[in-house]
Length: 157
Image (cartoon, rainbow, N blue to C red):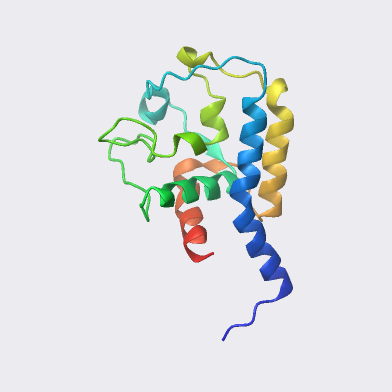
């Protein structure tokens, strides 16, 4: 039987608690007074249309992986159209909407109220970055790049 060191046990606990920590940051964002009304057009989910791909931290990727697994899926859906892998073909909606990444909550969509001013959310960005560092993350990386590793970590933790 493999013995776990104290540091590996503590790291595993950080991995397991990361989704809740990210949710706290998302809740703090939602409590900000800037009005947002996402009408779920999903144009922002179609990366080839916008030319923008969300970058996410390790904590966000772990939350997204946990949310995806809660839908019964064990792997990231493959999209031939280069749209967000969380965009469902059958429903045209986000598979993890309530746990969608920070970038998806603060994005550039004019229909949802436009991009949030960075100065109004910088403290929350720093909290995500601090969590990322505590999880041995590499800083924000593209969503499609971050997700396979996050799914593997969630599967094994």
